[in-house]
Length: 129
Ligand SMILES: [Zn+2]
Image (cartoon, protein in one colour):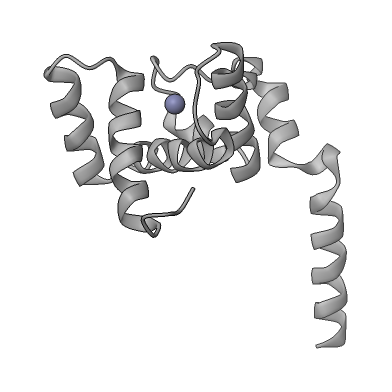
């Protein structure tokens, strides 16, 4: 048992090293995933292979570069990334909402924002970020 926990700890430690991270593997295989564009759906497998923090950082970076004004970029990026996760995981209500919103004329990014806003209003108290 002791051996097993030692092995586990070693694995965890080495796994956290940058050279072993999923991010490193993904970016070395596909440099395209170094960027995120909400108007083009990311490849689900590539998106989900990224670490959660990397997804949020990519979303944040896009909004910063596009100079999109938001009251709280960090909070927006987190929920924006959650919507992308749900789309990538093929979560039925979210996929259907995306299809409906884009067929009603929103571009993909606007549709992500509409769903993000709805989810945030239902996940956070009214005075939440
Ligand atoms: Zn956004």
